Structures are given as structure tokens and as C-alpha cells.
Amino acid sequence: MQNIQIRIRHLAVEAIVGTREDEQTAPQPLRLNVTFEYDATAAVTGDNLAEAVDYDTMCAAIAARLAERKYALIETLAQDVMTLVVDNGRVVSALVEVQKPS
Image 1 (cartoon, one colour):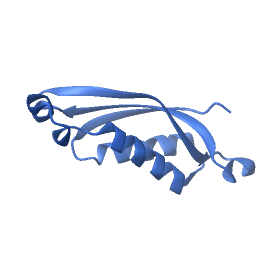
Image 2: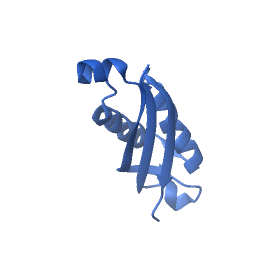
Image 3: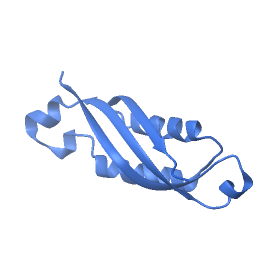
């Protein structure tokens, strides 16, 4: 087993998040750092994307998930992203950091 960590830094996304009424009406810009760990043995051995976690696909899935939901708390948003990443099937652990500039 060859677990490796991949970190996606400063992923620019938009989401409706916040407890104030004005925050629940329009998406706000966010920056995410997503770190995930998975067994990359097959990917590394064959140098094959089909055996790897495709982080471009993951980034698109994260952006799509955030575009379709509303959150009151950043913590709930972070948990939702973490669950999405881990549900990939290959990922064994994930860490999500959220930066809300406004």
C-alpha cells in the first residue's frame, strides 16, 4: 500500500453560506484547501489516471455541489465537501479548510 496525500490549494468556488439574510440571497466567493489521502499504488505503478483520484473531476464536483445547496454555517459546508471527497471511494481521509474573504 502506498498512501499519498494530494492537496488542492486555493480552489475558487462560490456558495450561498451565512446566517444573515443578505448572505442567503446570493453566492459568495470562497477559497478552499482540500487535502486528501488515498492508496495510490495502482496509479503510481501504471502511471495511469484511470487508477488515480482525478482532482480536476473532484474540483468540478465540489463546485457543482456548492452551487446547488445553501448553508448557514461554514462548518456544515466543510463537512459536506469532506463527505463528497471521501465518498469518491478511493479516498481514505480528507481535510477541508474554508476561507471566506467577506
